[in-house]
Amino acid sequence: MALNSRPLKWFLALMVVILYGVPFYQAYVAPGETRWAALEIKEALPAPASLAERPFFAAQFVNQARPGVQCHVSAIAAAGEDRLICTWYAGSREGAADVAIFSAFFEEKTGTWTEPRVLVDRQLSAAELGRWVRKVGNAAVMNDSQGGLWLFYATLLGGWSTASLNYKVSRDGGQTWSASRKLILSPFFNLTANVKNSGVNLRNGAFLLPVYHEFLRKFSQVLLLRAEEGEPRWEIRRMTDRRSAIQPALIPQGRTDLAAFFRNAAGGGQSHILKAESPDAGRSWSELTATPLPNPDAGFDMIRLADGAILGAINKTFHDRHNLTLVISRDRGATWKDLQVLEHNPGREYSYPSLTRTSRYYHLTYTYERKQIKHVVFNEAWLKGLDAHGH
Image (tube, rainbow, N blue to C red; front, side, top):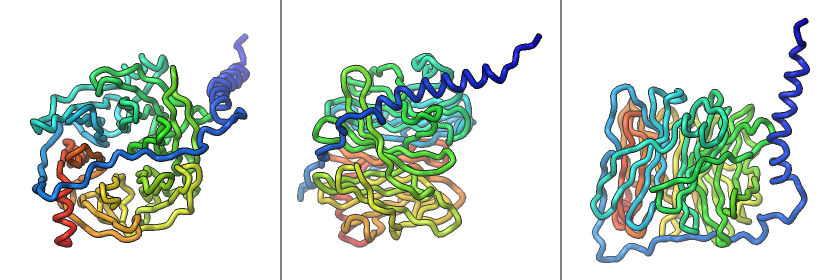
């Protein structure tokens, strides 16, 4: 007699819920003192540019174009003194099983990139996580305040709405990495969390990481992560209720004040970058408001300058990603001015920029026509010259 498979399916579903629900309960629901109390933002702003410093700007490619290979979603961060790491994913197409996350290193003193290498693919991810991985996707890289370098990356069961987040940590500037570990951020089969931009360090050694969801509803959250012995502890807070605000960029505005700027995924034509503010280091958030900046449902990045201004790299268009422009705001994001058009080529794509800074330079990487990752480096004197001349 054939066995009835329905009870077995219900039993397996119950086991999965328990598997994810117990650690979720322990991390977020179990009573205890909140780890969000009395948080303060820790900023490491570069010194203002010397009056004698000459403007500097240079551009090159991180990797070579390869036939049949698409590149997308780069991230850049410091990897030691005068050294940076760039990560991106590449494969036959976005969402393909052969997609891998690559990395390369840039030496500021020589102005050269190392040869790219695979940092993690689905086979390595599955082996390290001890579970099946269908494919890998977006990655973000950032520094903590203790000298650690963190890679956050998505694994997917299907489309982007099935993403879940994992992390790897390096204590030697990205030369070696820990095994991948999964972040259990939801009791519902751990769906769905993805990442685009890096986070913000706090004075207590913890940091905030912005994440976003696309399963059923699109919205953003911020994770408070504290690196402890063994696995890090985290707490999660909702940033938005509107279904169109994803991929936030966090901008420190003071000791506890944060601004967040969001990709507008509403579609339909005249969409603008959205903004919210937090007075308590990300614990609570204001209602969303629209900025004057257009957004064609595309990722962007922003960073705070030494003088407090906000620098953004955006697709300054409503409909596609053929234009990449540097913009600046000196009134906390209320008004903006164009600084420099970096790319403008109708029918092509220049997208998903990532910004960071070192003691001397600002670095920007972005997708170049889905074939390569382009790298732009400039100093504050170059920015001030553009701002003064009203470009």
